[in-house]
Length: 166
Ligand code: S3P
Image 1 (cartoon, protein in one colour):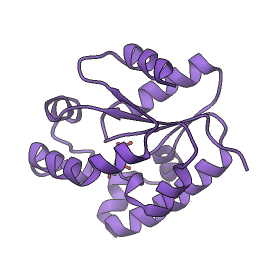
Image 2: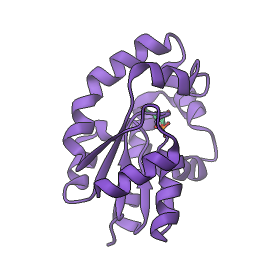
Image 3: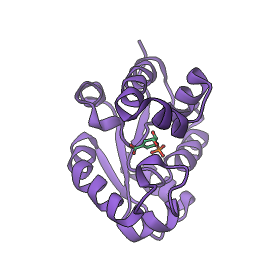
Image 4: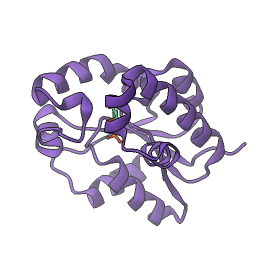
């Protein structure tokens, strides 16, 4: 069994994929993203899985993908924004270096736009965002070994801050 050198968590649109790739480059390791693993394994977009089968079915697929990545990847790993909702997943994170990329609601709405490709933000992004973060913020904070705010920072600056925080 192998473990990631860094796991990135945080809400959708915060820049986990962009920063994850930059971090992997800087550290000379591979980058992996559980959303990509799911899309590859399922052969369809995540939004389609939500529409076709609903969120609980997506979470079950996600849980398997996250477990596989957390136990079989040695580079930088980005988790989908909702992965930390699962208690078994949170337990698997214990003992790993987990960086929480955070942002405030206005930055979130700017970055995720109207959320057409984000099934959980499709109706009223600002309100849905607030509700989502109220339910999740403490889970991100508890799982993290470092918190890196991204507001007003470029991906390169966030990458530097994440490296400093390690
Ligand atoms: C989700 C985040 C998305 C994706 C799905 C659900 C969430 O991943 O897994 O749309 O519940 O926050 P990203 O955080 O990579 O956008």
